Image (cartoon, rainbow, N blue to C red):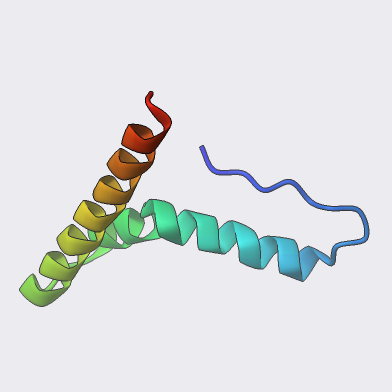
Length: 67
């Protein structure tokens, strides 16, 4: 579950933008869009490449920390 901690004095719009970015990085918005309408093969390929890239980054971080 994604979440954003709002800093003291931070405008709501800025916090909302950060939350949207984290959702976008996690692929939540693309999953919702995928379920709502037909996805072109080129979009599907791009989504899968992005997912593989995120997974590789996550694995690299885990390998570096030793977890």
